[in-house]
Length: 294
Image 1 (cartoon, rainbow, N blue to C red):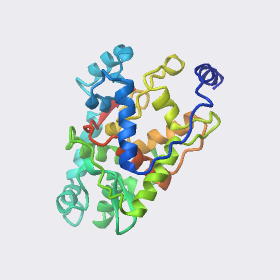
Image 2 (cartoon, rainbow, N blue to C red; image 1 turned 90 degrees about the vertical axis):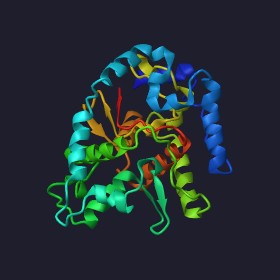
Image 3 (cartoon, rainbow, N blue to C red; image 1 turned 45 degrees about the horizontal axis):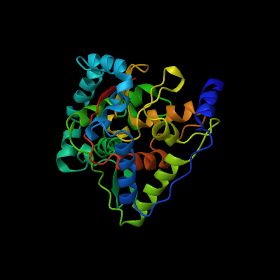
Image 4 (cartoon, rainbow, N blue to C red; image 1 turned 135 degrees about the horizontal axis):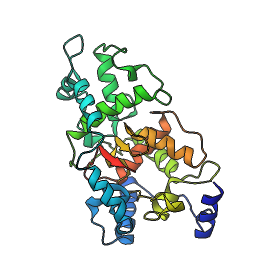
């Protein structure tokens, strides 16, 4: 931690960031994406879906990443997810049936805002609700009853099902289904924005420190940092150090841990709002999930 703090102090990062205030999400989106287009004018917009591999200074990482993508290690997990997706519940229904009937929406529309329940819905939440509505067996789908912050096996099973679901929409452009004229939806978005830009943990870090100010840099010599633009497009993803598929909830939790902050509850209001804000900021980018990441 001392090494990281020394690096931050040298870069003048530890005390330089302020929370931005804007009038509306559309203005935020224009400024957010415009910042990266101006800072990295040679990087094509769609490339931001590929994480830090887009930066020329990380070309050696990109070579390894491209080699992994010839035979992606996550394919076994996606295949497991496909089997679960297609398998019939006891009542004859399936996840595929929920998608056809509309209780699960197209992947590129997530996170979405549900006006009836006044809540943010992710693909994982709708997948779990589909299973519950059809009386799926929790012994077969352990993610239905598990503490997803602690039960790795259950969490990975959910990630595998979701990864298969996202694989059907790979390349489709992100368009969260949110009507910001709904004041409750707007409030949820604002909570996510505030979370993104707010410092936390012993390192006193906001998400923006690493992925706006330090985007494209190598923190500590072995932590190449991606741009904030495109963060959510790759998830569920498999990181090399994890050797398993995970959803973005786990990535948020590890980010909190890295800045010495207590992780929030998986699919709790903090992370759901954060995912909504991040995904809206990546509107228009192609989905790259499932994906490999360092």
